[in-house]
Image 1 (cartoon, helix red, strand yellow):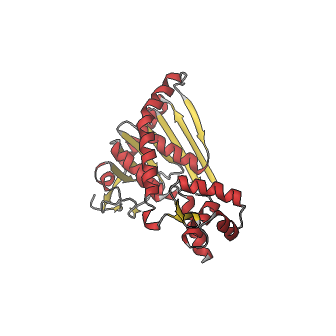
Image 2: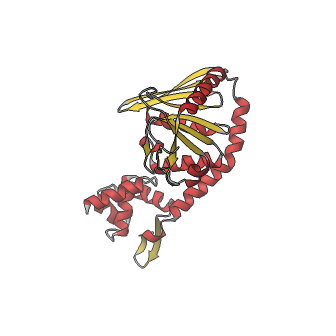
Image 3: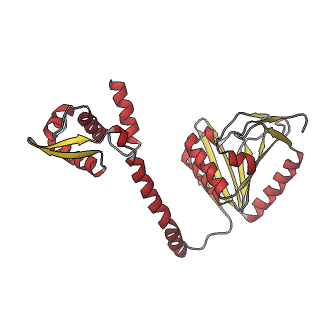
Length: 272
């Protein structure tokens, strides 16, 4: 039972609930308390704090009040009606998305001049995610040297949303790799069918030490092995142009992988 409660509490935390709020909701849902006093005794919290947390749960529509013969009682929202949590989040997200262009425009008007050439350093897994999201700015094409797919350092669902954004932005991705085989890695089939090409370079002559992104005037390289995460983004039109030429040359030498399905499975084929 305790393990199940811990799992539910962990899941609730992803919707923004604290452990104590989860405990109160579960106490009410399980019939172990429908007043602030009863809940206070059940979970061992001061009644004044229980009232504050109940106010939060009422605001989030997870708890409602019922007035009966014995006064006001608290009732938990049934589990099969909790999808409103997603509805509320989607509504808030839609509002933020609507005002984002105005915010970006206002901020751009306040921004000072940006150096034509600069080097930016990023740290940790969040840094890797940031430079990957930055590549959504690519105009038309993104060139990559790849060691692993996004799934290696990013939650699969998050990676899939990012891939969908590449498709939405019509960014064509060309990838060079040292590997000779890829297992299926995505359900964004539109990317595989229309926006992705991959070729193999023999690691004996061209072993990759870093993952590299080239787009617009940006040259980015990063490496993640254990706790050693190195990530740098260089903004330089000259460097990006030179690296783009090198990539095109290596691309001409590389051997295409045969795409086996719409989910990204691929392998070397002697017939190609």
